[in-house]
Structures are given as C-alpha cells and as structure tokens.
Image (cartoon, rainbow, N blue to C red):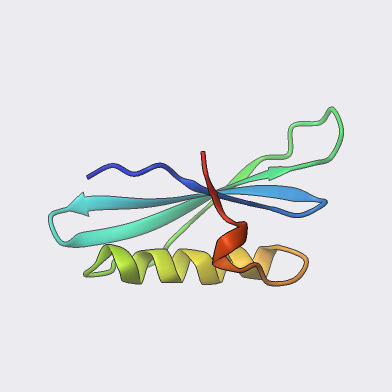
Length: 82
C-alpha cells in the first residue's frame, strides 16, 4: 500500500521520508534530503541498511534517522504529508 512521504524541516534542510514495502511483509525506508544551500543542487538520499517486518517499525527507524539529521529532534505533530 503506497503512502505519502512525511516531511520534516529545519532552517538548513527538508527531509522527505518514505516507507516502502519491497515485498509482502518486508519494509524499508528512504530519506531524500533537500539542502537549503542557495542555487546549488545539494540533494542526497539515505537508505535503510536493513528490512523491517512491519510498516510501523520501518516508520520508527526512518523517524529516528531523520531526527539525527535535523537541528534538534522533531515531534510527530511537526510532520506533514506531502
């Protein structure tokens, strides 16, 4: 079941956090990092190094990885679907 990515931002970057189902019961995540660095293209992608057995586990791991990239942790109310 495809879902919309969640977006988190700080003053330096925007994170588009995707949870993907590779095969039934096998989930992973990917974060697209859009850097706010003026006119230069500075985007990058970070992918999970393991699979998860549930969407909830993959979302939690993605959230934890994303929070490490931002200036200060974010709470769920700050996320927005894109």
